[in-house]
Length: 331
Image 1 (tube, rainbow, N blue to C red):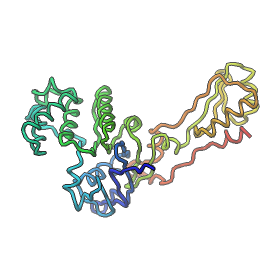
Image 2: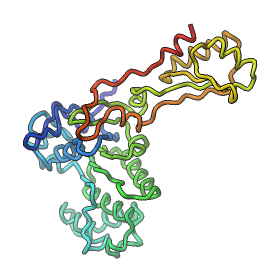
Image 3: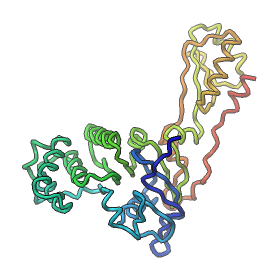
Image 4: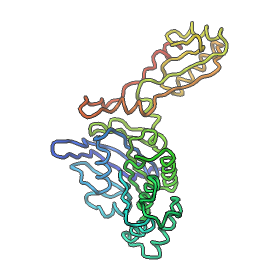
């Protein structure tokens, strides 16, 4: 039996600034060699969570372990295992790209030869070798962000915190950064990601947590979260008008489009429901030309589970997916 090793754990994590409660009892676990994405509106507590886990802020309560160590009691042990790339690039504008990396190598006490080797390796890896002797002012936004992440990797951390890593980048640069993250995880690195780009979480994350009002209101894989909100449905399209008309008569309650010869009904998209539908079609000798399953995306999840500042709190329990019409129609 394989035991999952955990890179990060937090239980009952709390933080307040004066009377403003930022984190109100957060529980989370992050497995080694995975990407965990934390979503939430502005002010939800994402950056505060990263600051606590990376030793940059102290929690007011709760138990935290990062790489097996308590960030408050043993910050040096935690820092030896982590790297942090914040919302804004920490690149020194007065140093060239190579000099920025060499500075980080000095801070990690790598030694002159090893520091140059590591800097050269990272410049090649991040496609910055041709710009190594240039100042960051000559870099594009994507290049500066890649340099920032390369600086984080000089010390070869096993856990990396990426706080809004692709904010302001163009689509090509964002995709380049995504591939870098995938490559890091393939090498066994754990990535804790905060982002407001929901497609970024969908593309990268093994698990996603949704913060709202200082609480973790939902957690799971992208597909699990998409099933938490209403809106999923199955659509059947028919080539044979006679088969379509028979299905309309039998599948009472399904929305139908006589011109497009389609039927649509709510569904959670589960394999059990789809099997029941296919078995029913076969038993009734009704042949559909095409079947498509539509599930809500992470935008739907985000809007259903989070609120803007001043709004009423979102419910901590996820709304149930409505599937009764399909089940009732197949009886």
